[in-house]
Image (cartoon, rainbow, N blue to C red):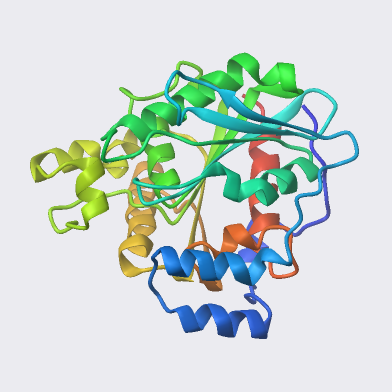
Length: 308
């Protein structure tokens, strides 16, 4: 297992002094407001489009459209940095449970490959055709694929970190916390980065996409909420949220932080990203406006190198 090392300050030191994006970028993000929809997604992507890079390391290679299951949505892309024994990161994109496309995150895959990680980015089945727990089941299936096939791409199958954003964070948390949904190779997972996901579903969550995935019966929401199962896990976590996350998404991360605090008797690593919105920390990775990236890399290196 090898990963590029650097001289970044500790995550705790960085999170105490984050400054946010450059002023001209911060103004554009703030103008979009503390809300999220497809238009904001596209506008935010455009802000960073010219700043990101899909360049792979000299020995790197990309394996695209690899099937990890029989459904057309059960495909993944692998960004391999070259060499062998690389720690593996699985990035689970968002999409509100009803959308999302891994091909919009090529720069993210290349970013992690340039930093020494074998990056896997999957699509997964979507509502309304596929309801709870299809997304979590697919995350578990990808973990098992990485444990079984990661070495053939240069990865260390015993060192996996799962990074989920938005709905991807919800699916990841369900797959890693809920004992009925966990991958067979859960022992290979060293930690999880969960960025602005929904972790507690309530009867007040009446958005159409929530109902399409989690169903319309509020009596089932407790069992289907990742926060309910947090007590069954001791997985190291990095929780992240942004200044301009919509309230329902910001409180989701805080709900999980509370549950983990009660679980462990101490607060988990929780990072608030000033000047960013729901998706900008992901699109900013590797740019001059990136502050989340070094924190994420530090966490992944720490849990990858920790003895088991």
